[in-house]
Image (cartoon, rainbow, N blue to C red; front, side):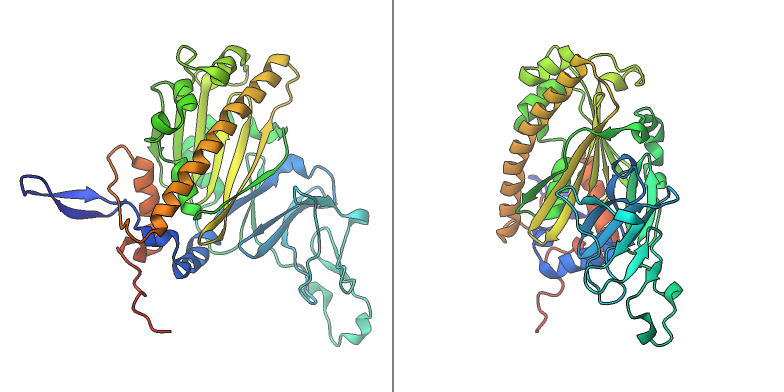
Length: 392
């Protein structure tokens, strides 16, 4: 949990105050390098949904902190993950469209640099001028691969480290999540990439911050009424809210009126918005009408790319199509408001005058997130960088 420090009350008595992370960890380049190695590369990252690569040879790419990953469906129907790097001279093997996807013609992966060729299982099967490679054994030069897991229809990779699998991390909420029938869903819209000039933790913590909803997101607050709840798990933060048709307004009110019955969801899930934040940087939004993932990809100490796409079960009802559009309108406004908020926070963190701030007993998710980072990187408990006195 978050650190506590001694403070004085107005009558001079001592008490303990819970503190959030210090401002320097949101901009320090050396700390960011430590996060990459100790927190981010050893974490699970979502690439796409199984429905995004339905046919043998279909693939999707994800470039994460310098690790170029591709997931591809093999000629045997199995999904595998490889690093998108030729074993000969390290050239990028596969390109992709805006969504990072494509198809391997003739069931082959051929390097555009020297023509080394791999099958859809990552095995080296062709080397131009092979006789000139003394003692080359093709079976020893298959593509390198990150760890792969498929959870509820979503394809995850992990580039380093070990630890619990995605299913273990999400296990406390398996009963809720299974009701949504995620493996049966298909992409509802396009993949969007939203760059933000902030540290990745600024985005993550804003997502898990429940105290700002009433003040900063008036439309969302009215839609949720007084039902917004936060719960901190060991690896996952859970936030949820029940729709309040009496208080909702604008697009939110229309959404409540329009949303049809969702037979596969039991009460109260059929009128509840569920949010799950899987540490360190991946969120799933589960709505009655659709779901999406929001992935906060760090590009540097002060730069983050938010990668997002919605999925849904096939439903041709006019009411459902309209509800999904209204959902998008509500959340588009929330995104605009959040952009302003996280930029304000990042500017303050970068100012050098913030230090640390207190966390209330109600900020359970922010406390838990701070604790998870400090467990992995103990220097995050210090008020200033431990290497500030180092001489290059």
